[in-house]
Image 1 (tube, one colour):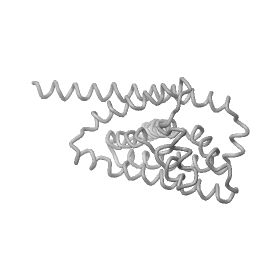
Image 2 (spheres, one colour; image 1 turned 45 degrees about the vertical axis):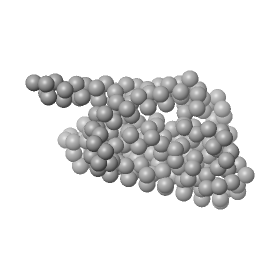
Image 3 (cartoon, helix red, strand yellow; image 1 turned 135 degrees about the vertical axis):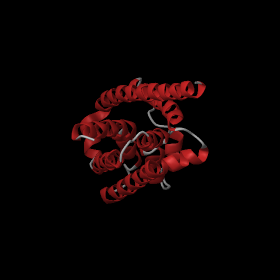
Length: 215
């Protein structure tokens, strides 16, 4: 595989993972839940939540194919199902609706508990959308180099997320609500486009298998 093709795959994987994690939107939830904590404690929770989310994402990236095989689910079926899920999330982002499957009641209930686990790490940073995406990316990989690019993309996105959480109070003050809304809507558009690509590829491959089986 040539370098240009490998970089293109990495760019696609990084973009998909970054848009789904949506560190900007997650950052504001993190700020609201750590507002009463001193800076040192806030940074500790930032590290814990990002490490846990990254570990879960990496687990499903590496072991996802085994999970699918155990459940008897094909990668293309997950492409279609995951694409529909991602399109729904992207649409909600574009229309300024809640972008993660966490309600205000759940946030309030978790405030004085291990909130860095739920809802920050799961599902805010690593939810069903990200899990299905990393499995699809690894399942559609054709070489070890591509697998490495997916792993590197996951790590890079969560490094960026940690940096964002570390400086979350400054960033939230600088961006404000309007800036976050604009960025979230743009990311939602990209996510919807990625979702359509996943759905169409999954449906095409399923159709090809059906035709091959019918012949």
